[in-house]
Length: 308
Image (tube, rainbow, N blue to C red; front, side, top):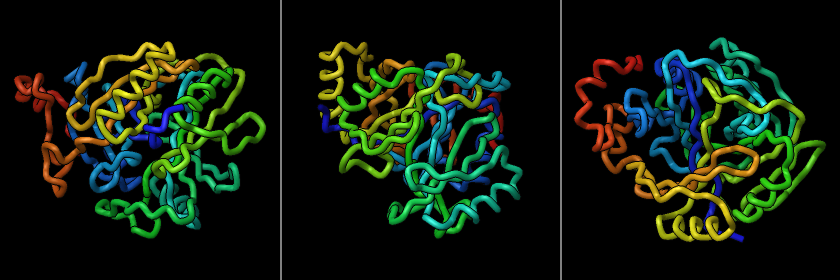
């Protein structure tokens, strides 16, 4: 069993509008845009990162906004919902805020004793705010959401699968332990991990998902550094998984592999961080380009959709 993985690093999804996506995460949810860059493989498309002040691993939601892309189809073989942690007792304040900002498909429920506020993002993305006691992570408040209610970071993600057995085995190998179960939902967590260390597996009978706007592209798990990442990569290869070589993503190093249920997994390093090319006070303000795409700057600055 691996001990290097600490929980979530980031979650990456697909959007249909960069401007609408930016407005939702900064103006509605109050997160900070900590990096404005482009997709390494499709530089005519943004890669936008949102999180706390510094983009701490476990707080960062990222998006590829492909203009006017069709919505994804929900089903099995995907991350069905991404949940953020907020202070316990603040869900009504959030419900009032989200309702005033015309947020869609809001409802409330309880899972494993935790109160949840469910809602959709602008592309039908499924989100939840979960009231958590004693989450001491420091929130970003620069976009006007008060510190006593602001998002602390991720709480968990839901994997929607037709069969949980192989993914349960994988998560267990990655250091997760089953901590609860009810009906068709099983909860796993990394003991002693970061505060974004929960994965829920929901098993159901449904057609396979079809990725598009509003779909999660992949989830990334955090390791401290490149040495720990190489240990994880070797262990996964020895277990039979097809794992990519290590890829430099400028703000972290990444490896990727496909989980048995179809979800794309990434293992990302906590180093070097988002302030490697910008001062923390000015994260996300300027368009940063991977070195191999710097020659496209003039063209991209003309063609990329303005964010405001």
